[in-house]
Amino acid sequence: MDTLPQDTAMLLSTLNMRLRDSDADLDDICASFGTTRKDVEARLADAGFVYDEAVRRFW
Image (cartoon, rainbow, N blue to C red; front, top):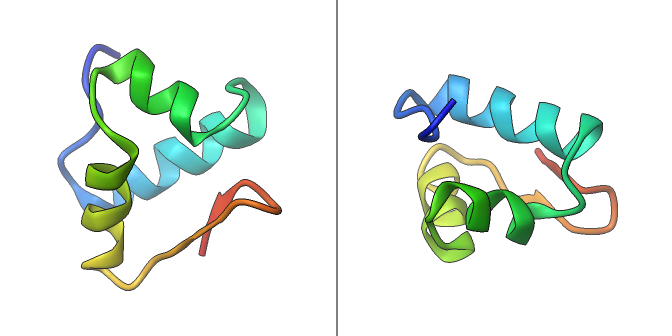
């Protein structure tokens, strides 16, 4: 996968899966896809999701 999904549900699923299974944190994921954490969090916030850094998961 070269880019993050544009679909919000797929983005949420992809990020939570990577946070759980492979990447150290959200900043690492964003860096690997050439985007900013601010942009990713804003996209998901528009859909009502927030990032909980303590559990490394979007809710």
